[in-house]
Image 1 (cartoon, rainbow, N blue to C red):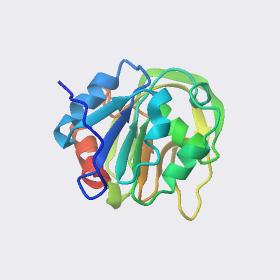
Image 2: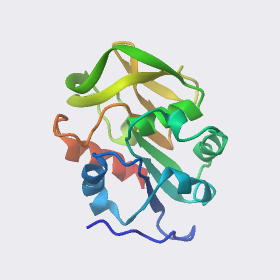
Image 3: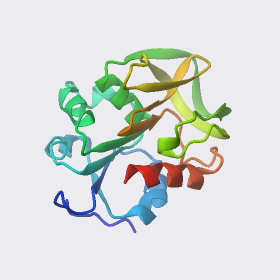
Image 4: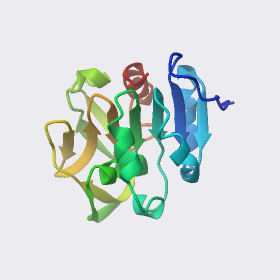
Length: 197
């Protein structure tokens, strides 16, 4: 069972906050993360109070709908993304939400990807434990976010669609690393989490 963790003060181990958008994959993700420490699970309506707490790790889960359905103003999230004591990990809707906070724009896919798997070549992002290896990943989305790379933001594309974003303090993926249609989910989460904490 995943236990909720109290927020820790800044000189202790970082607190992990999972933002739950009531998605069916939430349990799977929490199961992969349980060995990395205690996680406090919150709803999107509760996030505002936590965005200003230093030394916090945010995991933005998947979910239905658009990022804009949950937030009308992304300024507080954008400010949190620039907080050097915090880190962010976004999955599917969480990826889109972070991209929207950084100025990304939604685009509808010509063919929705619901339960579809594709083989991709991961980027070489050694600070997140990614080593340019091939991985079968599963998608559940009909929308993608278009966003440009900057000096601070790395953008990984596959067939011209943004699949991942990265800085030293954030990593996101449009695909579902926790899904049974993704190969080596344990390795993916392990590599990311070693650098996330």
